[in-house]
Each structure stands twice: as C-alpha cells, then as structure tokens.
Image (cartoon, rainbow, N blue to C red; front, top):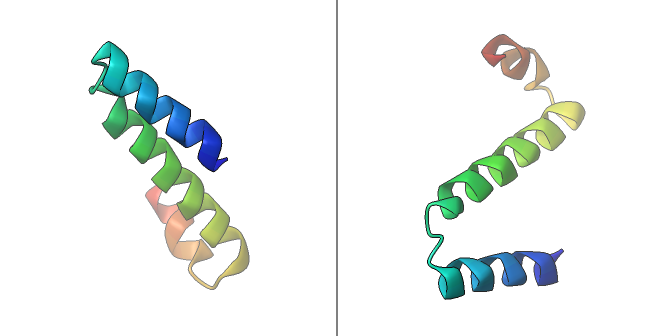
Length: 50
C-alpha cells in the first residue's frame, strides 16, 4: 500500500499533476471514515452525513 502511494506521489511530481493530491487525500479520508463507522458508536452520526 505504501509503495502504491509512493508511486502515485512520484508520478504527480514528475508529470506536474499536483491537482490529483486533494482528490487522493479526499478518497483516503473517506475510506478511513467508512472503516471507522463500521466498528464504533459513531455509525448513526456518519449515516446522517450521507
């Protein structure tokens, strides 16, 4: 996983695609939020967002 992220950031640096960084970070944060919602007591509050 870390290798994949490293390659993505190297690609962005080499090809000057810095606009991809907020998209990737947003998707990672959304994934972490969904993982946290499965196993904690905050699940009812997360479902209200969507």
